[in-house]
Amino acid sequence: MEKYELLPQQLLFEGTITPDQFFEPKRMSGEQIRLTHDDEYYRKLIDGQLSAKEIRRIGFPMRQELIERGHYIAMGTLEAARFALEEGIALNIAGGTHHAYAGHGEGFCIFNDFAIAANVLLAEREVKQILIVDLDVHQGNGTARIFYDRAEVFTFSMHGERNYPLRKEKSDLDIGLADHTSDNMYLKILGQVYPTLVEEVKPDIIFYLAGADILDSDHLGRIRVSKQGARYRDELVLSLCERMQIPVVVAMGGGYSPRLRDVIEAHANTFRVAMHLYN
Image 1 (cartoon, rainbow, N blue to C red):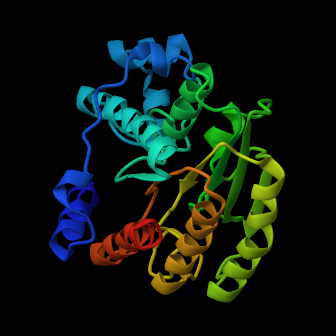
Image 2 (cartoon, one colour):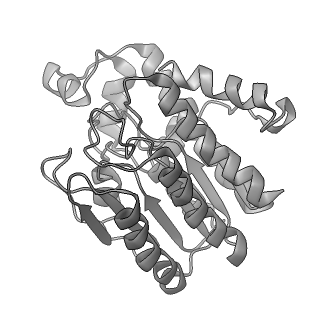
């Protein structure tokens, strides 16, 4: 998507970040990906053997370039998580592919980068407890299912109740929002739930999906949060991480406003908030 090229250009142009603050991830290994995704699914992807039904479920034609890109996005989230463990925070320009299940992709998601990164950190014993805070407008159904019976990963999804996916999975905590939920109600609910959740889970690291599809301009979102409201959301999430010294890794997630500049501005605000809090 064009936003992945324009967002870093905007951040550099306005001076929010400098070139030395970027990193380019390596390609993630198949072994690391298979800690989360089934061997058969991964093999079919690599060999180009997905069925027409499986491809339709993902939502776009399969090209080897997309599968390769998925390896780099997942590694970007993992490397960002490791930077966060050292520095307090790190952000992935892409990521948030939360609809991918262990054994299939869907909703334009091939690999589940949050799940992959979380599983690698746990396997390498770099952390013991993870909290996933998914504030994309769509439920993180793949993530919820992958960690359904894993106490080491607590999944929290606050999403549009009547939005995709039609059939929701069970996260550890789901909050389904009514259509047209606006700034005040959205921030009130999040402000009541999130701090208590962090206190109870006591995570070693937080994975935060900062979706821009909650915007009132988003033609798929059905939620009515303003750009300023989305910025307050980011401040609420990240300021608590900074205050409690909990490492946080952030991915951008979805954003489907007709005007691309609205999406870029919302994503850029996430970076602006992070730079303000952590500098």
